[in-house]
Image (spheres, rainbow over the protein chains, first blue to last red):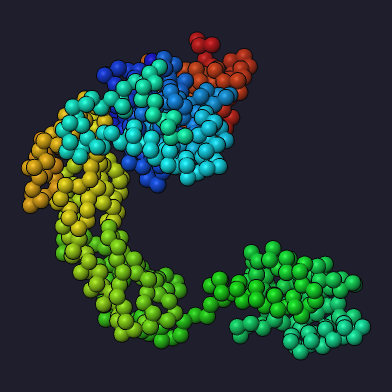
Length: 190
Length: 377
């Protein structure tokens, strides 16, 4: 009951007042599946990229946090290769810090902030994290390469290249559960 | 002994204002003169006359000036072999410290003020919108030919009008004034007005966008902002970034939103790109190229949220209303009993005693108690 009421209200708010650099919509009119896009923050290695996320609203929402993961590959200490995000507000207390006072909009804003300010002390990707800590220039250039390769495909399509459009904009919106095809080239960056 | 008396003599020669207060030369009291100012200080040496254990008592102005330099002073005390050499170090540090503080700056000469007042008079006092208490920062307002008001912020140095004031205007392009000692505020205003005029088309274009579309970002655009995120429909938006010098050219843009809505728009943009005509204005071009009408700001009533439950975001839950309120006056967030119970019961930090539940407010984390009515337990 709470879930339906709140979901409706949150959708209205996300439409009328989306957070800066973030958009969020219902996926195929389902009530438990949302999609969001976050624009990479300026000054970060994700600048110029558009990152798509999947938001699953659990049955017990808002008593449980939304399940959010990146669909667009991202090179980040706190986001793993399956797109899972290590962020305390995405977990229930006592381990996490989710509260019903938070909502989809504030959680997405926090993820946007996490992108700009990784937390290497609570890493999900140990090697990326130590790179971030001890070899910042290498980290920035790797993250930048990933952004260009995975998160900027859509932008290129805008540049009046109709061939680009013929290829389904797969990279960013396809689910990548279990499929490691798009992940192939990343090893070469190390 | 002769070495010590020799040092005392050199102290007296170099620092005549610092007078020994006892026979052994352990206490000195007096002044350190720098930049026409005298700073009172007292130096107390230990019985072995070792500087590293010395105490330095400073008067309030000296202490103020040396604020933040304490670690350097301590280090110098450790390193100096005798008092005269330390005094030289102290003087150098104080010189550096004074250079960095404005507190001790002398106010500008009277000519500064008379010149500034004369300049403002020439310009007209109605142009002045703000003056700070030092009369070192002023704001002038000017109107461009489309009736938009702009503010010029000027910061003066004491050497005005020989030195140009620092001038800032909220503009999307870099701007600097040219200045000679003969220039006056009128020159600045003229230079700014010329720049404003050159940006007239840019602001006309953006004003039209702001008025006739639903701009999601920035919430309160400044005059320097060249970016707009415009709603195209529910949860789809286009972000454009204008070139302030060529506002009606095709701006940099990208779409946000679901693929099935965005892809057709992107295709239209690619196909119709040739239709773009800089003579037509940006909004008309966007309409023509995307083949859409821009929606106006939806009048979603900004219903008063403060009455709604902080958990389910609504007022009525079945028939119940939010009757539980956080007791902390700074929070005061209302909740439905059922919603708050559902949240608190899942937390290890909550506990229940008969029909009262103790926990933390999900908004402010302050303790909150929930009395459970008998029908729900």
